[in-house]
Length: 83
Image (cartoon, rainbow, N blue to C red; front, side, top):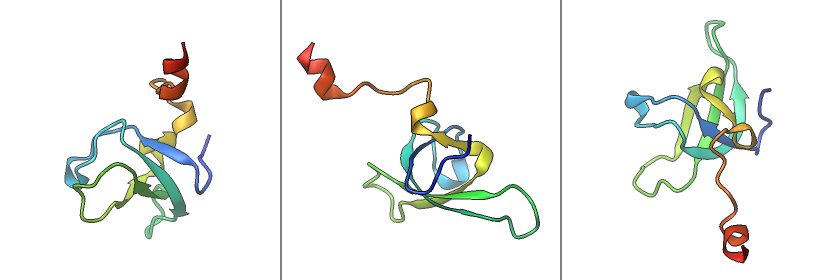
């Protein structure tokens, strides 16, 4: 299922050219069409990447998924402490 704008998303493939690794998270800003009719792109604002000059990247639609669909979802740390 295609994530909606402002939804938290997860990168699912490494992209050395953009210094991205699978598992990085951010928020979907918008979908953009490919200029030559290829796969749509996801404009993503990455979170937790203070070492990046520009936290905004564009990845193919197939390279991103909703964070809620991630098989590696992290548990809420507050919930873990309460146990």
